[in-house]
Amino acid sequence: MPGRDTVPPSPSPFWRYGGTAVRRIGGSADRGNGAALRAVADAFGVPRRTVSQVTGATSRGKVIAIDPAPVGAAGTLATLRGDA
Image 1: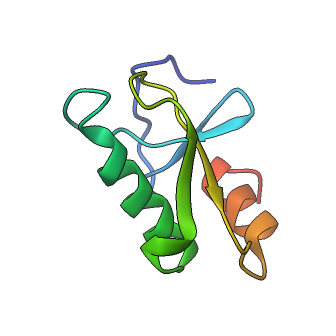
Image 2: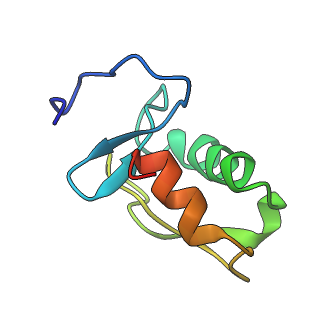
């Protein structure tokens, strides 16, 4: 498992850290919120308006929800985490 600040070489901008999909977003935690939401929307191929932040407004870690969940979301997440 890569270290917390290690970005492994990969065609995907996401990587697995523990059981989560991780993506590095530049800037401070609060400025990265919009970028994080856009990155998730792009990765899942959904409109940005369907992606919302559940927790983590001022922290590095974010919990993000997509509502409604897109068809194939579980498979996309598995691919992003490197499970597939």
